[in-house]
Length: 223
Image (cartoon, rainbow, N blue to C red):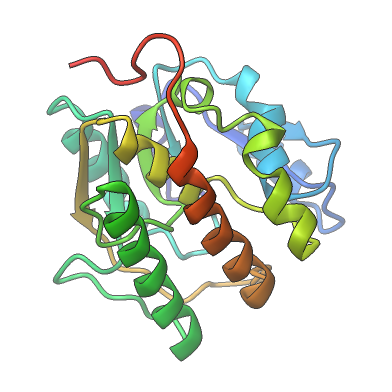
């Protein structure tokens, strides 16, 4: 986080899940806004903190070292070309992931391929957190609604992230989407919280349930 050029942004917001390691105090010492989430689970970090956001675009960024700071300006520059979302892809050549294992690498390929086949996407990486997109898409695509996640979470006793659903619905809504290549270095600290089997089953179930999703109201991504 100290390597982030804050002059690029109007706001830096850290969502903290009631950690016990001093993260919130450290973030405040760097001058960042901190939101302490009330409900457990990664998607509630988004749902609860989203009303605090002030910008027209948001970059979701993991500070564990997996998201290269050097690519933040590249995401912004690409978004300025008129895209609704730009994904920092770990699998768009010449990028590579140094954090993937055999299972996670295959899973990310399978999930991305499934999103493309079922929902008309053109992704090389539909799963990554590292991306920039219009802030209002969170609400216009219904990512804040419990019903969007309820059945898979109930079936597999887990809490899901929002990125796979964002990829699906942005593609189905005809949003203008681009990718840039971005390496995924190994994390510098902390343990991965990914629940490989539960999350994998939940996301795959969600992909097929989304075949029945219909946009309501005005198009989320007007041409």
